[in-house]
Image (cartoon, rainbow, N blue to C red; front, side, top):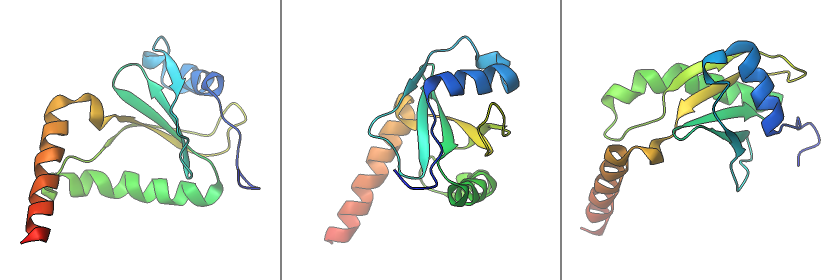
Amino acid sequence: MHEDEVDTDPALVGRLLAGQLSQWTDLPVEAVFPRGTDNALYRLGDDMVVRLPRRQVDTERLEKERRWLPRLAPVLPLAVPVPLAVGEPAEGYPFTWSVYYTLETNPVLVREARRWMAEVLADRRS
């Protein structure tokens, strides 16, 4: 744990959702392990993930990601996560946070990722 890291847990995620994104309040929230180093990850329902930056420096990276991924997604050969919603600081949590679809729950995206990776590896071997 970093010295300046903020503590999070599923209960905090539930409170943040209840206060800002109530359409997802009834979905189960579970911590994702292994823990990320920049963001705390929480599975939301069957096909979403909540990403809470652990430190102030991590918020800047997440903001860039939220800004650029939707622009890059249409031109990349592989699906990338695009934010579904952005939450604001609340409930003692000091940073903006995001909700994304999880790519691994979409079988089409998983097949696409495997095919693309196979092509990349094949090109590297030639």
